Length: 179
Image 1: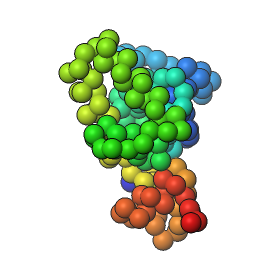
Image 2 (image 1 turned 90 degrees about the vertical axis):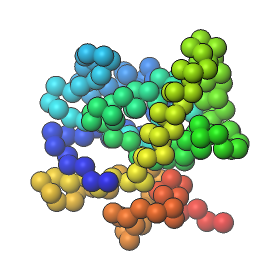
Image 3 (image 1 turned 60 degrees about the vertical axis):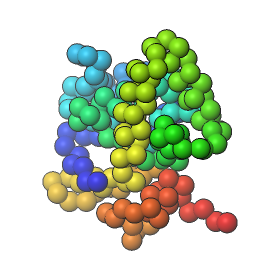
Image 4 (image 1 turned 45 degrees about the vertical axis):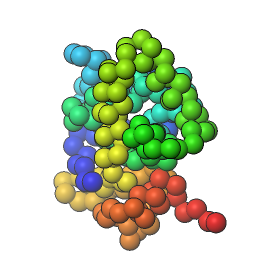
């Protein structure tokens, strides 16, 4: 839940499957694509996604796989979010209503399965489900061990910082929702 600022962080939010535009942003930030499709910043900066990397746009799978690879390689961090939570539950086989662009993820996976087959599709879904379910509700960014910044998707209360439970996760995904 804590990450050191290190050589710097680039914080991006709500990519919403706009993969091509995301790559343009990376280029403008100075990232270069190198071996095995990994993007590195020449000064050692890393990416922090505030979530919602999928849904709405045309390339959810590519965007999710980008973060899967980069998080696993220690080149990026990703926070839980409302769309991420819904897609994680869908990938887990739960009965969720896919709306507000989330249905595009299911459509993409249908095409993916036609091209790559059932087993490869199931394997990818399992990896992405794990990535999304394990994403923390927030990160505390430190510099030389001192807390400097809290990153979350929709919001956080002071008393929630550094803690994690279902109530906190929901607040960080959706913000202060008044009913």
